[in-house]
Length: 381
Ligand SMILES: [Zn+2]
Image 1 (cartoon, rainbow, N blue to C red):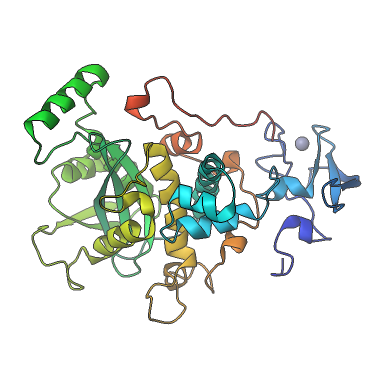
Image 2: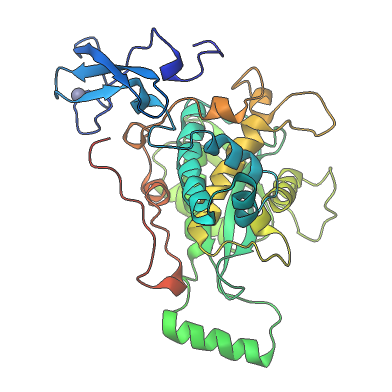
């Protein structure tokens, strides 16, 4: 599809690659035996635009080209790209709402939707990627709701490419210096809500390493660099035990006291930390725009991942090269409208269990107990 025909409904020759109905047997794979036909034209009432309709001859469900567009359900179809741009450039959700003249709840829903799309987009674009460099893993610390609920985003960045390969999350217990009053408050909260799992970092890191190992040949090796966090070697051992492949994991540890310069083996992670804190308002120091829910921080991290790898150039003062171009995944930087060109379908993405948790917005924020916000998949499509 050329750039001027950036979405399926801009393309008069568009043919559906598979059935849009997720319950149809031709949704996951549609070979030559899949039969469908063109089934008339649908005129959108709001602007009189016309769209091709199709009928699947297997499940007898109809759908239009719109079913393959990211703005399928939307009235304000200009919003996703604008919101992605604003939140990637340090704007808080309420500020974005004021800029775009919508409610902040609308921005929240769009951020969740963008996060889901970005997760699927990134997975699809990196499906065949082979990791050929050392990977730096690190815990990026932030908090949800209040400083009593810190968490780590466990990040994995390429040592040379600075490509953010993947991330997971781990809730933490508040530590560090606290006043007597704060200690009492923490105790009260823990009595009411329970303590976070002390092995959460190990679990989050294990999921992250397993995901990285998918991109290493069976007899290859994954070179890891990290600080001295005690949970990391345990996660490495766990993955070595569970991996059915012969891929080797080498783990090099660098003291976090070493100067954070360009020469530091953990530079790629330090740079990602810095960019994430600088670009997303929810992670700024002393901010009032912090995430009220961890799930929201995860959605935003997915948006950040696509922005960092595919949209933003690697060096602010260098040429146009993005991290994805450095790895040979694409030939040019991608604009948000390109990233958002085509809708992605979760069932086709082969999501691991923890990633389904992200997709369905099932990461709960302890303090909200049974008042969580989950995302239910539409029954059909
Ligand atoms: Zn069908």
